[in-house]
Length: 215
Image 1 (spheres, one colour):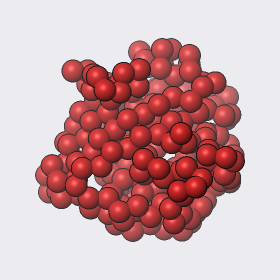
Image 2: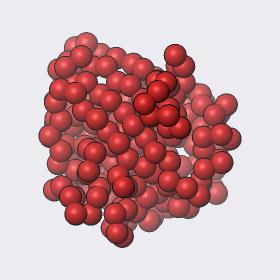
Image 3: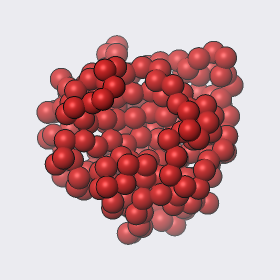
Image 4: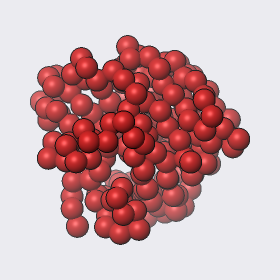
């Protein structure tokens, strides 16, 4: 089993969260979000804390499936995106954290300020404690996968499939080329946080334009 995952597009709120006909209660908290057909776009490359909050009940085993497509904004050498899952509360404005939740994050930074963050492509897991406090749990260098998983697919939507079990804290991320096959990354959250429960998720971007869909 590979430890380094396809963290290119980490977690989504629910299987049908961003399909236009099934959009749940949502709040465009910061950034410039629009809906076109079945895709949701974040259109502001300067928004560092762009975020959309989604009311989605999460407990027990959860399946997250979606695709993400790069639109613009990484020319300045920096950009990122991720999703908070199992959030108990959300803030309807720009914020660093998202209540009690876990944030799965993909980062591209040619000159990161934090020495724990690798240069280039990396993935992070954060434990959010409040809307202003997050702790870095893990940081993973994924530069070796950049050409095959990132640079070669910027013009096309890339599918993602993740299984997160709120009862056990186990999270499994599957190979995007074979979502029924190999697991590319596996981890278990802090046992003190189990069971994971929440009524919110939050999708966010940092200095980049992306679009998301479930169809």
